[in-house]
Image (cartoon, helix red, strand yellow):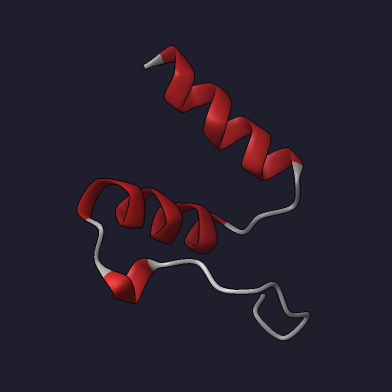
Amino acid sequence: MQESARLILGLRAAGWSEKKINDFLLFIESGEEQYKPGKDTDDEE
């Protein structure tokens, strides 16, 4: 759990939105393509 907390805190510090973080974690756990991160764009957030 400590590693998960550090990962989330690091992504927040990098400026990721909560939705982007949640989708990324869902992709890691499920492997579902709908949650796969794409290239960053200014329009996303």
